Length: 395
View 1 (cartoon, rainbow, N blue to C red):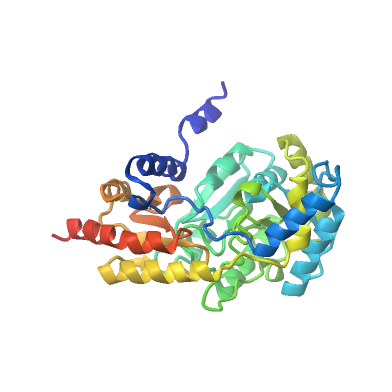
View 2 (view 1 turned 90 degrees about the vertical axis):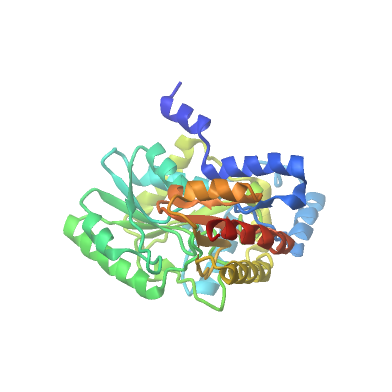
């Protein structure tokens, strides 16, 4: 066996382990007795019109249109519709040939990492705290994963560490905003500072340093805050997108890679993405849901529900006495654990049927992540358990 793959298979991510633990506990205690904040699985249903369009497609369109292969890079009309949506929103001039349809953001990231790297010395950076699977994806592409330590003051970008770490082997930096696990949106000022730094370093090392935007939470932003469109700030940007969160389609695995023509070596980079998709077996994203996206590219699920949940959870926990990072987007709350060891805190939380994810795997110690894409009743009913957990630490 491939020893690395064997280890990955035998040791699932802590998020998945907790999700499975929660399911077992619910089977014993009942669904309403376990407060599972582990998995970012959208609780808000898809837009009503999406289901109607899906039914209409199934009833009116013949095969092979529905279930047959599209072009490897995706159906042309689908990609034209996505390009128009982004151009209308962000004042861009993307063309359908800039898009490559994929099986969600995970596939987009794996393809892009494979396309950009060719030797173990090639480095891809992530900013702590970060989505746990980035390291797996980068190392599986044969490259080196580097972690920029967190700025614990406001969870923006730690520029002192980043500038120190960038070197001639740096190929790209992953930017995830709104961020999983903190819910923080990187400010325009931070992103412009990042753009200036990368431009300087690219000139110094005589090769482009790409920003890879992982932005499945782009449409989940609160308080009228702007999520800057990074290609408008830094030309050497690749976007990896998924409709899992914005349209509540996580199980249908549909997304795209966008390689703008302004990107350095864009023609070759796009071709390399096609080649990487071919090599990895990601040929032809699900046809049915490509056509769904063509009809629903301008829709989102009801994001107001997540805003309500954020307020319920943040206000409820801070009233008890917990310290929390205020989420500006996404649907995660980053909570300071009541002891330095977040894993021990997680285990104590289990005694009260609270399922929370320790931050160690996100590249930060001493915090836990709570996914509040759950029912409002789960949040309300969990408060008594959070009070008991707090009192255990503050007798």
